[in-house]
Length: 464
Image 1 (tube, one colour):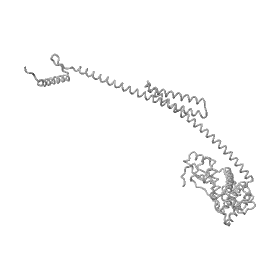
Image 2 (image 1 turned 135 degrees about the vertical axis):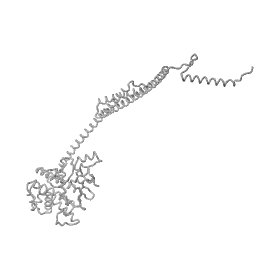
Image 3 (image 1 turned 60 degrees about the horizontal axis):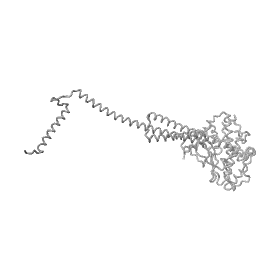
Image 4 (image 1 turned 90 degrees about the vertical axis):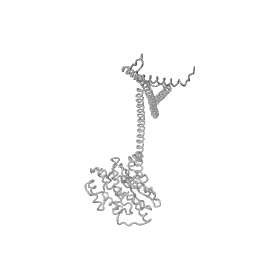
């Protein structure tokens, strides 16, 4: 019998197998299956049940995924709760440390011990949090822990601010006590200066050397005369303001007519405006040798210096009232008469005294024997002596003042208001400008005698 080759059988089997597979696949897809040679089709209910079973399996799979997501969310909340507790504990340590520092000055034993215990307690809490993190021991209720941690942190921050506030209040009280102490010392020094001035000027005379010569002149002599002159001007200004108040003057309006648009640091500072007015009138033409007196011939060169120094020496030890009574036609008498008529306006004199009797006496060549005129004459004498001494130098001393609105300079200016100086120290970037010159300054060679100025509260445009 002939043998059969495998190659002749294999293709037929492969074709048959492929046909059976296609039939089975078709039946499975259509739901038709051979049962006893009869095709059976699945009912619609069976298809629906199969779909329900598939849906249930899908839902159960999604639920398993959701459970996994919830675990991740809980774990994330637990980590947030741990960090919140960590930061809250750090804030508590900071607050306790601030309390510890505050209790050390002034030294408070109980406060230091309480703060120390709190620091130790919070450090233990930090250590416990570290162990929880290492052992993966998370909080079972992280939402509540987050809220409690936030409350604790806010309390710690509030406590820290409270401690710092108390510390700042303590420093403020210390500064206030220092200010009070310095003011008392300043008042004591002022009283001592007044006593020294009384000793130097018991009889109302300048304490200058009797044997003063041109070769011995120095700026210190001129500075001494400037101080006595300013003192006399302020004494006359006080008397003038007293007369204004007695005559029911509006001091605010009067001060504003002299220097306008000035905001004063204190109500009493308006006196500097009247002092400015008196100085402006009394020192007018100070830079001229004849001091605005006409028809007066003056020597030149060294003779001029000797001439003015002799004037100074002759008048410095004499009372102004006595000199005017004995020498009513002297050069100083002419100066005194001219300055009184220039400074004291007729309306001012009428409001002060009800008439013009003093002015009429001065115009007639005589001098009134009143307190007001005596004070004026003494002031005029000091200004006259200062002018004589200024022209005794070579070159002569020059006078200067600063314009309103310029910057304050410690080299050329001296402030008459302490409040303005304190404001400048606290805010150096916003120094108040000069409102007006109260007392002019002087220059002798390279020596500067500062002018006295009033600084305004108004930030005006600064002149350069």
